[in-house]
Image 1 (spheres, one colour):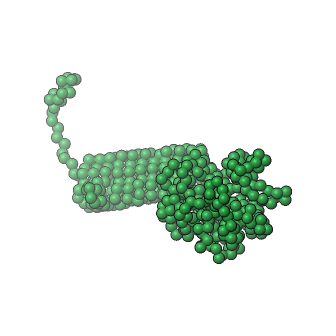
Image 2: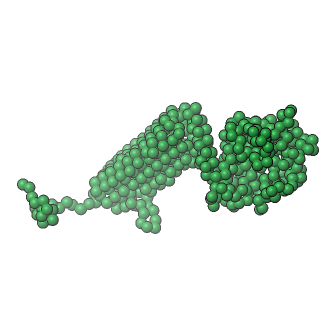
Length: 462
């Protein structure tokens, strides 16, 4: 049976106190609506339709071409929102899942089970429910003596007996697609809010003789919706715990999972060890047997096997096999360290390649450069690449030695097995096997001490 999915993403999210649409706030490093789309795509539907409203242009930009998008111009309730999808789905046969763009924690496994249960039961609609430890604020599932769903009662309308029910509505449904839109046309707005509510379709279908069922999910935490910043933090914690557990079960050591922050798209190889207070963001890939110490933050970067990164920040960088970084290094976009390269403490690299086995140990800046293999770059070396308008490139050949406190004024090419004298300001090319010296000769002035204020202060000791 064909599957279709409608994602509700039109709400303003007033309680978020934000100019940004609620569904674009992030959990696990991705917008909530992206998380829902990820799960939806994994269900192999024939079509996904997303309903947008507040901040619709921003939501459309985030969604891209992953879903058909329709607009709910007036906020008239969930039933009215889903009717906006009718032109996309009304003539199709199959099952339609209704999901919320602000409920990002449902797993593909749970939603697949819901689809399968619905198909096997022959229901007109199946509600995904959960047993809530504290059901306060949720709609309660009222069943008859045979266990059939009679109705969903909201908190404010519940009798004391109904309020004691712990089975709650998660806000996720699977409908027979054609019956969905048929019943939506029968929903009225005869309520205090003057809105059209999706749950009203259950009573309509039941009164017309159709079967209304419910599937109870295993994990209540999956049903968590996000309406404010407190709930956003809770959802992030649930997802972080889930993500960290998956990595640990796959062979990654997290010294303290509670203080390790790993986005959902991050990939990590086995036998990697991650100390507390490490943040891995975006589409970062970490190889096997990598060691990451406390204070490391990595975003959208690739780190190969056996590398070690010590209290450093990386953005859109590549770290080769067995390379070592830090402590307190900063690898900016397009930094590329080859196998066994080393960028040490207080080193910054941007748009530059540091070749295999090359070392840049201390207090240096490498920008817009290509450095060959087994090159030593001394402490305090600066690649001067910017004239206020343009960036210029430097090339250094294999096995060259750059003396400490060298300034390389790009564009410059330094050959292989070449050297620069410490303290030089290099403005011209240096051929292979040569040494460049660009500094003033030292002048020594005897007894100059007596001409200074220091002599007046300290005198002179023989």
